[in-house]
Image (cartoon, rainbow, N blue to C red):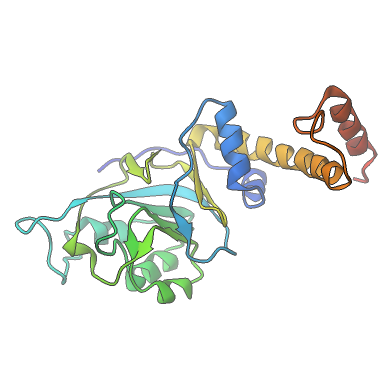
Length: 242
């Protein structure tokens, strides 16, 4: 098990990350050279919910009969249960289930517990059981599939708060995760503040460009914008009421 110090977002940056799309965030990360930041195949349980929080990771390996816990679990030794009691306010519990959906990786009662501990969300590249119950928790949740079978059949928890892979994306403890209707983007912690501000600036410009295209303009010189269009945008921003 490990621990990584995290930079805490300002209130302004957090507010902006609740507004911008994961598509915009991945574009801004790509401009910094980060290519694999979106969890492909991971979908929201409730697409109308937004998620912003810091990664608290949990790693599973394949279950094997001589090491896997039974379905009763041991709250004092099972790493999954220890993680549930370690998740804190604003954390997103991120599970490396190796994209294995042959059994659930989490369920309703322990999801209820992390919500009560103040968790900002739940993300797994595996399956979830009790999805209807989890949906009622109003806890932003992202997953690959539903499966009714308990996790011990396929998964053995071995580590928490260590670097993991989730849906092919590296997640470091403390990274900032943003979820929307498309899925989940992972922002390296040290870049999250800047990405928040740059993302909102991009979307404000793109709203202006979208208006021009919707009014009949062709995309040449508009998307991406020419210097003339950028000057027009800046002039409009200056004239906008405060």
